[in-house]
Image (cartoon, rainbow, N blue to C red; front, side):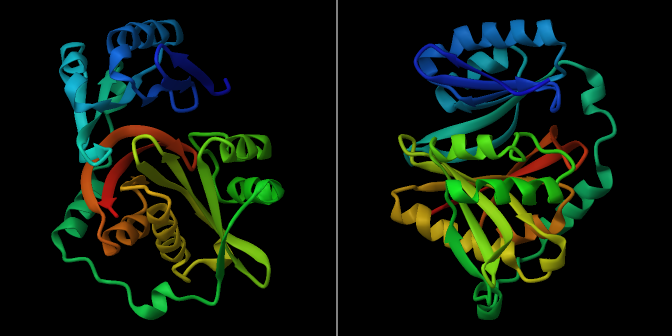
Length: 278
């Protein structure tokens, strides 16, 4: 079943499909809160989804709690550097909460208890060149994502989807060596709310060990700051300690863990939320 996107009322956006077995409330206009709850409840029942995952402005969070949602993460001053966002979820099937990654959570606890090592100059500077990517790169972008990920929560293995998102405030960046792309990432911006998600990190296996995620992230941070973005966040795989280390080393703050949230690399995994102000 392919991704389905719905627009509600004053500009609320939700995405749902069976790969992630969930509904994702991507953006909520507070005026649509009650109608959105009703629509998501109906969609979940019709499609037998096991989780509803939402980004919710703080003022309407009590409405979601009253409907059975729990908070899994929170970012202060998320919207326009003033309003908090709550990452709230409703679990519709108890199996979604079983088999939590206890070992990985223990590793995360150890990681968070240690002061992060600051990156050295050599780690941030690189023989790779980073550039913003364009529609002409869409085919190669999708090819790399197909190579790196067995599954992904959005159809980034489709070049037409890449082109579509490029026209919707998503900027892709690539690290290349001798003119050939080796690693990718993207910044998904909300210019009105002045925030951006740093996401879609992928490095081809033969280029591992060159700190390319860090190099890309530093470049994207600078680009977002220059474009007026104030809050950066990411949803990183709990199972990827190196990716978690990258964000911690660049002074991102851990905000919470989303249990069994995202189908990535062939299975549904838990994800960690990090944020940073620029």
